[in-house]
Each structure stands twice: as C-alpha cells, then as structure tokens.
Amino acid sequence: MTSVLEIRDVAKRFGATTALDGVDLTLHAGEVHALIGENGAGKSTLMNVLAGAVRPDRGAMQVDGRPYAPAAPGDARRRGVALIHQELCLCPHLSAAENMLLGLEPTRGRGGWVDGSAARRRALTLLEHFGGGPALDPDERVADLPLAAQQVVEICRALAADARILLMDEPTSSLQREDVDRLFALIRQLAARGIAVIYISHFLEEVREIAGRYTILRDGRSVDRGSITGTSNDQLIAHMVGRAALTPWSALRSGEGERHEGNVILTVHDVAAPPVLKHASFELRRGEVLGIAGLMGSGRSELVRALFGLEPRASGRIALHGRQLAVPGASPARRVAQGLGYLSEDRRREGLALALSVADNLTATRFSACSPGWGWLDLDRQRVAARGWIDTLHIRAATPAQPVRTLSGGNQQKVAIGRLLHQDAEVLLLDEPTRGIDVGSRAQIYEAIARCAAQGKAVLMVSSYLPELFGLCNRLAVMSRGRLSPARLIEQWTPETVLATAIGGAREEF
Ligand SMILES: Nc1ncnc2c1ncn2[C@@H]1O[C@H](COP(=O)(O)OP(=O)(O)OP(=O)(O)O)[C@@H](O)[C@H]1O
Ligand SMILES: [Mg+2]
Image 1 (cartoon, rainbow, N blue to C red):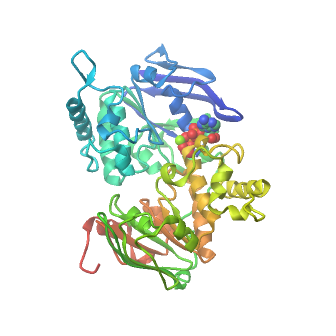
Image 2: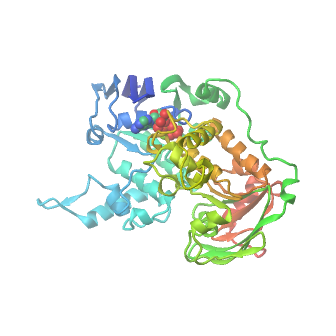
Image 3: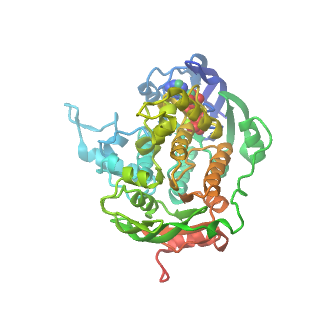
C-alpha cells in the first residue's frame, strides 16, 4: 500500500496546555481512517496542523513521500489537503455557492472577474455529487440556512478543492441519517478513486460503518491503532479513556413509572410557528424527561424555540402552573424570569460568548449566585461555582479563566450545558444536548439531566440519537412535518415505531 501521508511525533502546546504530545499516523491511498478519542484529546488540533492552520512545535510530516510543512491553509490546499471543520468555518453573509468556491472562484476573461453563473453551476454540481442533500438553494445566504444545510456547504467546500487527502472533523454531527448515508456513499466513491480520508466521529457505530483502520488519541498521544473489524467497542473505549470500565448509561431513567405522576408544570396547546411548526400540544410534568424525536427540519427545534420566545410568529397557548404566558411578544429574557431555560442546538451562535472565559460563561445565566448583593460580582464565589461545574461535567479547561473559544468542541458543549444547569431553571428545554460529546462524557450529561428531573424539574429534550431518548426519557413524542404526535410512555415505543411516525407524517389521531 502506498502511504500518502506520514505523521511522525507531532507535538503542539498552547501556553500551558499540551494539545498534541507525540502523534504518529500513516494514511494510505484510498483508505478511510478513523481518528477517535475523548473530548480534548487533540483530534481537531491535529487536523488544523495538517490543514496549515496551526504550526506544530515538533515532528515531521510527509505527503506523497515529500516533506510537508504547510505554513498557511493555502499551502495545504495546493498540496491536495482539505479540511471539513468541526466548527463550521463559513462566511455567514456570503451565499452557499460563494462559500463553496471561496478562493477557487471561476473567473471570466483576463480581468479576473468572478463568473457568477459558472460558480452557481459548479456549486449545483457539487450538491448533486452529494446526492441532492437537504433542499439547499446555492444563492441563499449561509446565515439564513439551518445548521444541517450549513454542514453540507462545508462538506461541498472541501470537495470543491479536488483534494487527495480529505480531513473530516465530525462531519455528521448535525446531519440526519439520510444525509449521513449520502455522505457515506460519497466517501466510498472518493476512496475508490484513491482519495484518502481521515474521519473523526464520536459515534462508534458510524466509524464501524465507514472506516477500515483507526488511530486512537489520548491526551495528545496516539496510543493505539489497528483494524476496526478486529476491535470491539469496549476495547476502543478502554484505549480512549485509559481505563477499563464505563458506567452504562442506558439505565439512567429513574423511578419506574413514578416520576411522570408529577404535577403538570407546562401545558402547551396548539402551538404553531410558521412556516415549519404546524401544531404541537402536550403537557410537561414535574420530574419527567419528555423526549422529542423526529427528522431534521421537522419542526423540533422550532417547537423549543417557540416555547422560549424565539419564534416571533408563534401562536397558540402556553400555561405555566396553570397561568397563561404571552405567546406572541414573548422574549427569552421574560422566559428566563418565568423559570424556563434553553440550550440551543447551535452553541457557537446562540449558546456561548466565545471570547469570554469559561467562568463567565458558566455563571452568566445567574450572576446572583456569585454576588453578595448590590450588583457586585464576587470573583472568588464565581470561581468556586465555575470549578463546581468543571468538575461535575468533567470540562477540560486549563483554568476557569480560559476563553471558551480555545476549548475543544465537545468541551464547549459541556460549558453550554453547565451554563443552563447553573441557571437552575424549573423547565429545561434542550435541543441536541450531547452534540459532539464523547462516549464517556455522555454519561455525565445524562446523569446531570436525570438529576434535574429527580429534583422535580421538568425536562423537554430534542434529540436525533434514539439510544439516548430511549435511555433517558419517561415519555416520547415524535415530530413529523411540523406536527407533534401524542406523547406516550417510552415503553410504548420502539425504534421502528418512532421512525415510522417520523417518516409517516400526520395520521388522523394527531
Ligand atoms: N487556541 C488554543 N488555545 C489554547 N488551548 C487550545 C487551543 N486550541 C486547542 N486547545 C486545547 O487543546 C486541547 C485539544 O483540543 P482539540 O480541539 O484538539 O480536541 P478534540 O480532540 O478535537 O476534542 P473534541 O472531541 O471535543 O472536539 C484542548 O485541551 C483544548 O482546550
Ligand atoms: Mg474537535
């Protein structure tokens, strides 16, 4: 086998943090190579080194047998290395097509004018390669696209570069199964043409499906490698976490039928938010976790957003402890004051203040907990509160003062969750709470959610990951084309009936 990429002893420190501490990896032509490891293990840093965005402190790399030391992303592109970023790296004010072709725009004549219609045609071809993808208009501004469509734009952008080495950093974290299938079909075609892929994902099932060999990173070191088929999930996880056992999280659902006996906290009646959300009615009770399943774009996110006052055109009735809340004219600030908390599916745009510290982000939802009064902030108290969440959720940060922007993706997600837990809301609205969280850390998030329910809070959780809905929820409802099914006890659902309802659309009973 010819190796297209050799990485030897690559290391990188950021101040006091060692992100990479001796990584070796050999990539063969035409292989899909999985790179796995816990949140903060160094995966994205290694991708950034390969893509020329980060300079390593030591080590050597070769592409096609020649030394490779890209000083800038342009160098990497020229040598045929393209990166699909974990945190999508798009220009929000440019169109989808412009983003896909940024730096590669087709020009007309000698003046270097960008040929808009040629760019559009090229973008459409790229989208076709992707098998159509979610309905996506190449002329639409990226800022107006849902997260899944943005992820497709990011993928097409890497494809546009005609790369020979494709680096995919969690490319499917916002994609629905159907789009994942499309992406996998595309990856197989590319691999058959000799293109080598490094594939990062926290979903081991996905990794098994697409990858041949794997490398595991732990604390910045490559600690194990081999063929996926010859290695069990338990073996992979043991290498990732550096110890044998993990708490199984499928048994977290508590209270064998008691919890959902609690009083009704939130009554939602015929809530709609045009154009996507058509109808949702349900009751949310004290001490329960109510799951919302459904396909991407079915209206799940719009539902939680409407409840939290983020959909200006929402209608319907919402009552909290029997008291009607204003639906049109609601604002997130009012909802927070009323005891609701919200975790957005898009942490970077809506969940976090990236430039601020971990401590500021964790405590911003309720500074009063760190204040002796008179509007002062007691920094010691704030540090103690932040450290508490850092420990509970195992957030990997050098200090509470570290800017959130410099945390790994999964650790940013943990900060977003810690921030919501700190708010101590009575009703938690969670949209994809474990996006980008590693296998081991998911257990800590599930425990935290289960603890909230056990304390008598009410939790509404949107998720695309069925095992976590079945593991954690007491009741479940399925959103299909903007309509929410009746909520039923989790025991009355199977993965098959959830899927059938999600795809089947409205039936008479709704
Ligand atoms: N610019 C930076 N400044 C300081 N520390 C950084 C910076 N970039 C990364 N780090 C640190 O390097 C470590 C590795 O981060 P990296 O993003 O590579 O992890 P990862 O394996 O991709 O994790 P995840 O699965 O959560 O995406 C983390 O501890 C992170 O905080
Ligand atoms: Mg990462």
